[in-house]
Amino acid sequence: MHESKLPTRQINEEETNMSAYIIVGLTPKDTDKLQQYGASVPPILAKYSGEILTKGPIEKLQGNYPHKIQVVIAFPNKDKARDWYNSAEYQALIPVRDQGMDSEFQLLG
Image 1 (cartoon, rainbow, N blue to C red):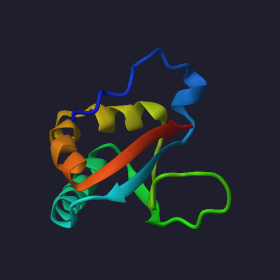
Image 2 (image 1 turned 90 degrees about the vertical axis):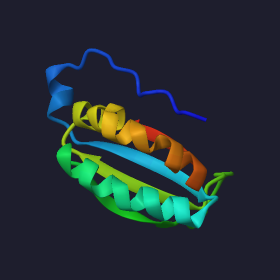
Image 3 (image 1 turned 30 degrees about the vertical axis):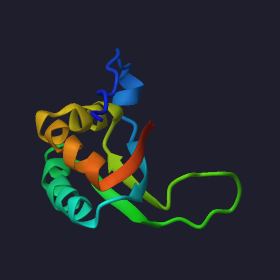
Image 4 (image 1 turned 180 degrees about the vertical axis):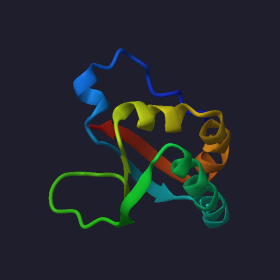
């Protein structure tokens, strides 16, 4: 299943100066596809000044979160985060991503 692109909207000047984060919750499905996806993401992130801050298994403290792993990606601002997610290079990886894992992507910032 192909994910839809993150919506675009007008961004005020204050938002362009604030850091933004993409929070990814994921549950692995296919280790080979997940490794293929994981190896392809960093060079694309670098083009948009994105940086993986942390990734790994979560420790559930409260609530029902369906995913086993969390990734936090930092960007200089929401515009860069949206540009990365909506880029042709990243969009081309979505079929491999979806074969490798069930996931949720959220933009915060």
